[in-house]
Length: 195
Image (cartoon, rainbow, N blue to C red):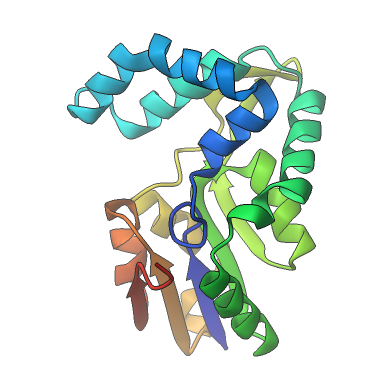
């Protein structure tokens, strides 16, 4: 058996799905106003003072805290069905299709949010491991339910979901330092293969 692990944003997409989802659900004007408002926090993140996971939580909380689970799911499904295919790189689409046609176990392993990736993955018969949001009383709390699926957490989540000893071959595709550990897990690792 073969396992094919794909990072999502930047690897198989030409744009960041988080930014695109915010623009889609909140509007482009509100997105850029939010960036301006959050710029001090984003600067601290760039300087390494605020960690990746906390910066992402604060970013999502600004736009979505208090939103109902039902509404978030509705927006995520709409985005998945109408927008995600527009940002998939053609070469990445071919690689995904090739692995699927070969009967390989294909998994998206992403720091992006399950709420908007899940419907797209289901549509294309691809498994998904992603960051999940915390909902309290069915409303987004502004926090993550899981650890941010980034760096070593990608490997931890893959190992929690799959017994790697059952696979003869492991492919991994990534495009950033957040994928380094995932790429190291594979027999065949590809860095920025679809650019």
